[in-house]
Length: 33
Image (cartoon, rainbow, N blue to C red; front, side, top):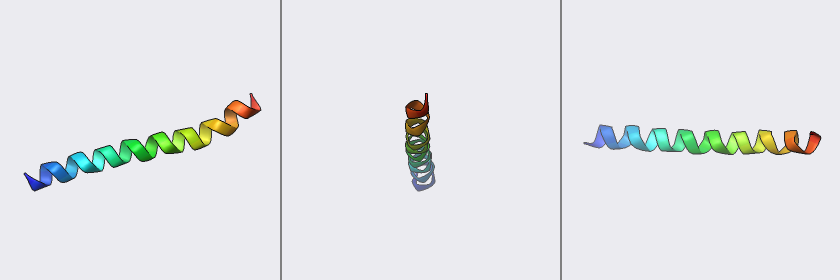
């Protein structure tokens, strides 16, 4: 149970950080375009 919960939390945090990095990288790109 705990391991499954940890895996789920890890995937959620990974997706969140991925979205944040995409946003931080994408904002300057949109400004340049």
